[in-house]
Image (cartoon, rainbow, N blue to C red; front, side, top):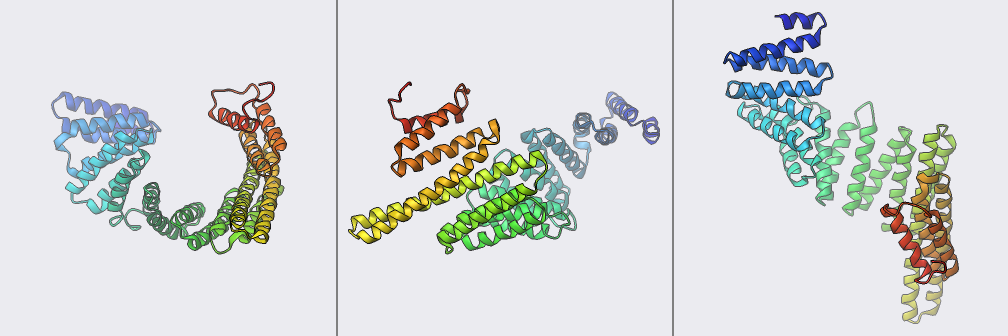
Length: 418
């Protein structure tokens, strides 16, 4: 009674203390089953007060004292609440144990399709957080038939499909992952806020690409790109266009389509950068533009390598005209790639220390192209620039060591002054 009065008068901390005291007195009197209601009430108030540790302690006590006296549905609820609290503080393993208990007791209570489905939904997510992908996928698949938008909410259905898509992707089942992500996106497209819709469309496109379904992947990336544009998210818009460029290279659009799309990605990023006023936004867009030029360079370098390989094949077949044409195309692509990589390095350079690794990566990629073009002195000059950039840098940094080792290879075993 005193706890109830304290709660009604706004003295919720006092109410928690009184409820816990009453519970302790019931336990001391040998009546632990009466303690459960008070512990649950204390947990609810503690949670409302922003005291998750207090709420967790009260729920643990309720389970401990309630034991066999609590009905199966009640035990399911207690375990599920504990799973959510423990999971929120990062202990996914213990939280999963409570979610599993919740699912068991929900089944015992005849509530498999309601409370049980929610418990399995939570369990699947907790298993995913532990990288237990196969187990998580099995649990989430078992939850899906019982989860409904009417009972559990469309958010729970979308989240389950999302998690399931993540699991299947990690297991290499990309076509199935795409199907789950597309189903989730189809529900999320009706929501007022379109961030989840765009993210799911983008993830589905990745799955379709990994499954080798190039046309479907291109359509999904195009859909995601339009959503990112509507959300004024230029970074992911640019990434969706870049992804389409790489797809084009693998599909019917070929080299020309790939070049056009990568140029579109550059243009979209430049346009966003011109419009950006916030310094942090500008830095993000500079980095994204640098990455886009770098990927453009990689794409052109791949085209150059393919042309060089075609020239070598033609030369072996003694078709001189074809060999010369392919060789010329290869050199042209390498030269164009160098332009892109130089632009990338310049952009990363404006970011200072934050862009150092990206800048040196672009410089070393350019050094490789210089070497392929027979310009060993230019390749060595770029390599020396990378070594100078890391002068005095922490040798414990794995990227620093890798960059230095790669630069040294361009200079040979007997670099003067080494």
